[in-house]
Image (cartoon, rainbow, N blue to C red; front, side, top):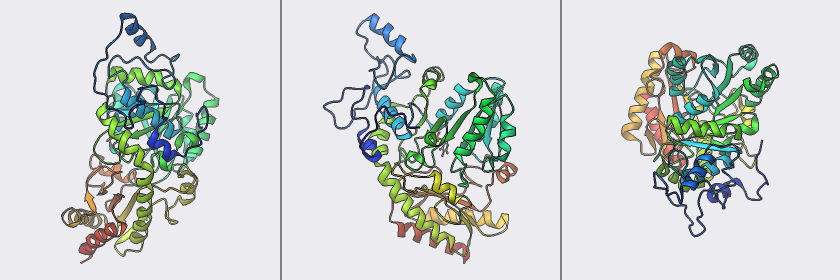
Length: 435
Ligand SMILES: *Cc1c(COP(=O)(O)O)cnc(C)c1O
């Protein structure tokens, strides 16, 4: 649901560069590049002005997008971060965006404002490793339990949501690392059915972690989500220099998110907001187009490779949910935009496939220029990792299997190198394992 007061005649990529042009966060009429805020506290012109500032902070009557905030202390609000928040809200079509120091801080805050002791969360069974750990290891300490369910098939969701304790449905689409898709509109329909039987204060929220797709490839709010979280560390930041996170959602959550961030801490540092605002967002469109074009070529190369059991890329017709991908993953112009990540499974028995995965990683680590062995994703560099032995190593083997993480699964995050170089590096790594 677009929340723009008046639709802009300019394209999204132009706004990603220029933002709103006018910002209430800072009068930078004379700057082209916005300044980096570097002041932990702010001068108050009078005691009354201080009182006014505290009164306006996290006040639902105060519209941060229309009125200039009175800055007091960085942890409350800060101009560079404020400008980034405006740009991110626009990119996701959200009423508000609140930025945090990391993606995990953003996800914890989104859940923190939506649940309390005794509530339950429904999460897709395949989810980012640290989100899984947050839900499994920490939330139960606060009396919040999570059911991990299969949301690819939403048929069991009505029964789950009939439990009056459920307050949140959270998932990623595409999922990490298996690139399954979840039909946001279908989850919306199930949540709407459940909400009909609930009071306003007990309505269920849909939280989507949109890190993999970025707002360039998918805008979950328009598809029916209530809240979108991102790790800005990934393709929105884009260059791998800074960590960050954001929660985008309705104005009605803005106050709680600001207060939560004030008290639990972890606001995005202005020095990290700045590169995301100045380098990350302005290049998101051009980077994504190149990365997606490469992903398609690499996916096709891998699909015909004799050592590869299967390739999961939403852009391939062989993807089990290709039709849903075409519906859900669209760039702001409406063109199919299947994302920058792909996942492939190496052939062999469990032990064999895991060992092959390890050997491919080692070969790439010591021989490849265009492909870098590293966790994380969404950088100008192509990154490769082996979830079973790396990012998801904390998830017990049994839970890995349940989450669909195969021993021979390899995840690739496309960079902007020459496509042929990425293919060549992969080809030679696969060749050594076959020899
Ligand atoms: C990286 C990532 C996170 C966590 O973000 P950080 O910035 O590392 O805290 C959450 N979800 C997904 C899908 C991610 O890829």
